[in-house]
Length: 67
Image (cartoon, rainbow, N blue to C red):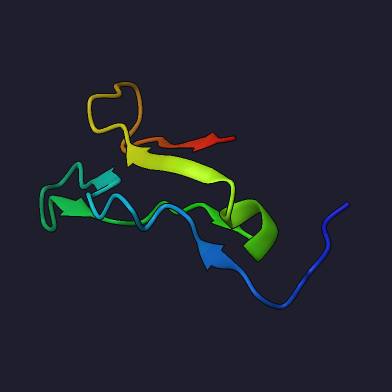
């Protein structure tokens, strides 16, 4: 069950890289994928990165390390 706390933090902002590649190459790289968390969980995020080497989709995974 999801709970709307009203305040979410973009915990993936630490990596400003692109997360989507346009197959038609009109706009080749854009940021379309994010990870959001409430303040308590956001405080536990150790790192965030976009895996631009991933293959198999036009969207790149956003990885978080939470401790």
